[in-house]
Image (cartoon, rainbow, N blue to C red; front, side):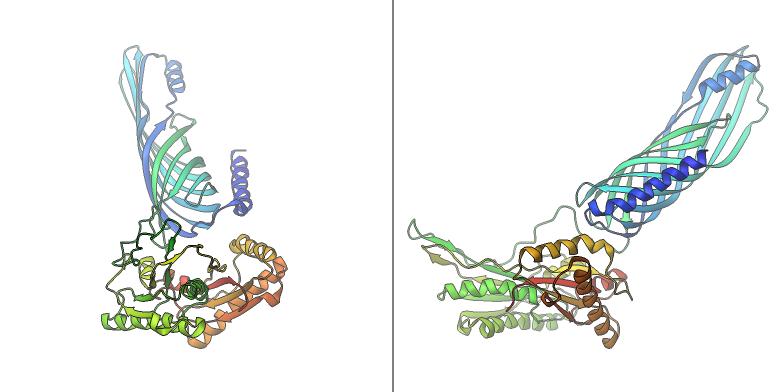
Length: 484
């Protein structure tokens, strides 16, 4: 009967884990390890102990117990989706003891220690993109070690007791993500254990745990503002008259590794910049190019100049901005805005800043807002091209947005990691095409509104050093925009 209840509870948690993903924010998946510790509380079976003494002809005159200790656990697991994980590990719930004084004069003392191995199913309910509630149900192979001592008239027949048995454990708690890689938990768990006097009793563990997720990008939970730039924009002069308002515009776009080409999403952003420059023909702009610190310093200097010049050339050729109004300057790796020791920091430092003169306009600025752009990432496993169902909700939102905005089109850009050029190109094209087919099949998106492009391994987001880096490069970007 006990095992049937355990099986039913495990099935319930598994069912919840399959139902809840549609309600959840996206969270990290994959392997993780953790460790925790805290206060443990045992239920000492005082009534059973005194009853056994009474049956042997002794009246208990005083009973004292130490039912608290420090417990800890070491664990690892796999997060399948935002709502379901499996964990297993080792636990040590600590040591507890009691002493019973008797009449006739004597005493009985017992010391107990509990530990074991466990496997749990964990169901999670996200409260936000960083926090969630969770519950667990599991089984454990628990070990009870007990030793007994007596004095006076009391005689102990067995001084040592050892047992192992399979029983259940449950728990509830709260989890907070400090970053994509590191999380903290506070939880309470109840372990059902052999109490060495013929019963099963409860031992509770109130613990705080730290978790590390493998393959996650390091990013602080509290975003630290980028370091102040040496130059952000030309200071605005005081308005000459009360009716005059001043407007400044600035552009910041990022580049892929070793690439000076301008991505589609960035071209959308530069349209607003071009409109600003067209509206205010007296203004000038300095295009500043920057890189990360990976590679040769001289090469980075050259690459930053090329990136700045690419933006200037684009504004001239595509938007008819006068060349004499644009100055391209490369700063190489000398002006980082983020920590180059992290992948995210390197990507932030591969950028272009456009520093633009302020303009005066009594009537007010009337340039159109930026056209809708979205570089939504869908990541893939090494040899996989199928669309993961975890992206279903986000793709459904894209489809709904397209229904509300019939003038928008979608470009699906497929990318790969460091496979051979032919394989990478084929795989990237297939991934992008599969996303297009998914939108058509599941959400009836008009295929004529979907453009599919494969770029192979030519547009990396990160360096292909680790498995996590390579997975970031295996992606499809979804870019929304208007027809040219």
